[in-house]
Every structure is written in C-alpha cells, then in structure tokens.
Amino acid sequence: WVDAVAVDVVPNGPAAAAGLRAGDVITAVRLKGADGSAGEWRDIKPHQWGFIDAAFQTVPPYELELKLKRGDETLEATVKGAPDAAHG
Image 1: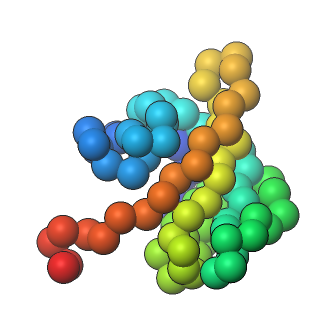
Image 2: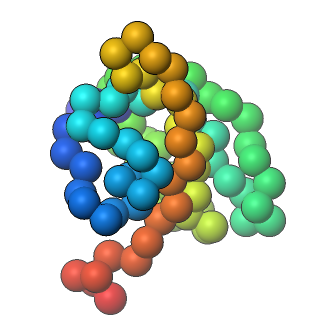
C-alpha cells in the first residue's frame, strides 16, 4: 500500500510550494470541487493515500487541502496540482 507520509518533497514542486516537508504525516484531506467549492474533510488512515492520490489526479481543479502532523504540530496546507513535465 501507499503510506500517507511525505517521504520526499521535490524542490519547487506543488508539495514544496504548499510547505510540506519530508516526514509530514497526512491525517485528513479535503478535495476541491470543479466549481472551486471545498468538500468535506475526510480523515484518512495511513494506508489510504493511494485512493486520495488517484482522486487528486482525476478530479479538476487538481487542488486539495491537507491536515498534517509535523512532530507535535497539526498544520493545514493546500496543494495545487501542476502538469507533469514528462507527460506534457
């Protein structure tokens, strides 16, 4: 399965722009609707990230909000997708 932990954050990528750091644990997500409206927060278990990643890549506007744990802190971040340069 795919864990909901940021293992590597690509410099200048969408996760880095949102302020994520390696080691951040994603605990909840909220996808944005096509009209820009925010959906409901959904708590996720560590092994559920694969589903969220797939939904993020297939549902415009390719934007989601995250609640994450960084040490003892709970933070929120908004990740905005970007086209994959390798796939054009």
